[in-house]
Length: 300
Ligand code: ZN
Image 1 (cartoon, rainbow, N blue to C red):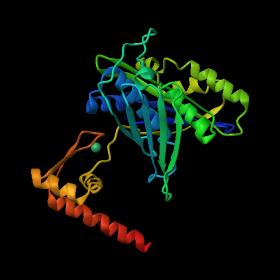
Image 2 (image 1 turned 90 degrees about the horizontal axis):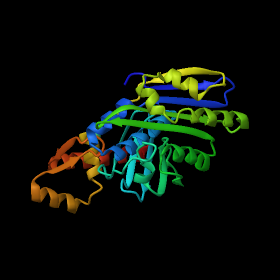
Image 3 (image 1 turned 45 degrees about the horizontal axis):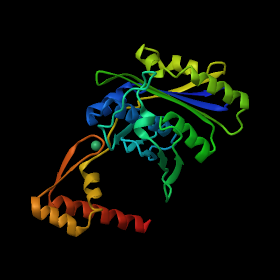
């Protein structure tokens, strides 16, 4: 979707805010993975969170992975994003589903359960950055906010919502606001109060509210400037080259056996369901590419 993600900053520089209309992202995820409603909401919220977190990366080579592992029926949810908020993801058990909660909302906390939230950031350094917390509620938005507070010491408020009807997403959105360490207590309290007015965020989007209008609710009472918009969308980055190199994590013996038995190896991308077929010469080519790259890196 064009201009799906809006970025803003308060005029005093103490907070930056991001609003995402994730309706298309969630519908693309549904088209790829065919999840049951509660799994779809859990995946949708995680994808939007990863998109909002990704758009804070500085460089186009950077990447972010958000991973949730719970003891609920959905098990693992994984989403990966880039610096413009483009995102892809999957859920380990797309069939996971629960009855709606008394308030009519999908029981995402129930389907996720207790567990952990992990964030991996590839910032082009030798080792990727890694942070992990225990899940607070499994509802994703509170967990993401808790992650920033506990793991990165950054006060953060977050709201995420997915509205589904007849197997389609009719409104999905996310808001993430981050405060700098010197932000005043009253600003934090104000923003937390504002976000309470966004508990029905997905309905607001379904009713046609724009990102600018949602930003106005999120930053009510604060002076701010709109910064820019990004075309965040569901985007897979898989390719036959990458998939072939991933196959090399199997031992040569295993690969040989698979080729012996079937004459080819078929793989399927977790994120977009694209199928790739490899013959012996494809595996050789992948091995050659990796060897050449390692050689080049050694010379650096
Ligand atoms: Zn793919």
